[in-house]
Amino acid sequence: MPETPPRWDERQLESDRQRAIAQFRDERIGESLSTYLERFAHYRTAIERLLRTTGDLAGLAAQAPAVLADEDLAYATRYLAGPPVSTDDLRVLANARLTPASVRDDPDSARRAIETILRGLDSERFAWVAEGRAPSAEERRIAVVATAALIASQRVRTGRQTTAPRRQETLVKSRLAGAGFIEEPPRPIPNVFSAPEIGRFTGECVVGASRKADIVVRLWDGRVMPIECKVSNSEVNSIKRLTNDAGVKARVWIDDLGRNNVVPVAVLSGVFGLRHLMEAQERGLTLFWAHSLDQLLAFVSSTTE
Image (cartoon, rainbow, N blue to C red; front, side, top):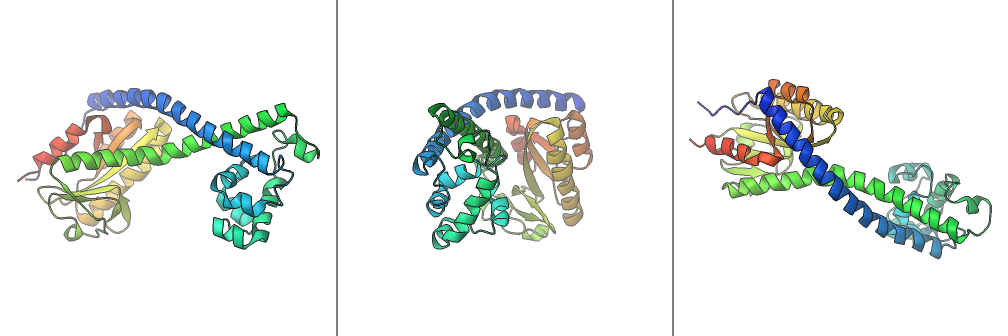
């Protein structure tokens, strides 16, 4: 009989949940501050350069192609508006192409983009532009600091959403490799016969008919183990990450590949609600924690025939 994946009782889940929350707090406070300060310094320099090269924004429209062809200046320019405008929105609102090559080749497109931003210019930070005058040194300093803080905060939030799961994936892959598994190039896995060879794994790919997994492992007993790496910053967010995403995928993979052929797994870090953890297990998802991957490796090892 294939080794049954572990199911944790409420006491064990609560213990691991609290440990993950404590680790999340420690990492978030220290990492976020250092990353924020780094981003703040970078974009403070960019904003100062933008003001200096455009005559405190008076010449921004005239220099639109040069500004938008510069990655840092283009990014900073979108934050002149209040609220900031996304690249996708700006592309639609200005009917403009915004790649560096496009803005050089099509100056009119670049000017439309800048004019769109200027129509939404934050009059609190850049009051002097609307009033047609030069800023005081203090006005310029405040505008630079406020804009750099706005950009840095957004960059930190965006970075959390992408780097934390990737870091977790890298850690899981490293531990699998240390346990003797070999990584293969990812490819669609519509059925068990398309899965990696026994003792191998792949990165992100579609498993079954339509749902992607972050990592797919072929266990020693031949079963397929799709792994989702989930990082949550709140119990509310854990509903999306665990219940509405990983939990749904688990049901689909079981239906597509067969209950005896697949072991859907989620590797968790951050903040998760106890009730959502219990529900995820009931729906067929096996849970492991990033802070105790030895448990994942112990299960993997137990599937050796």
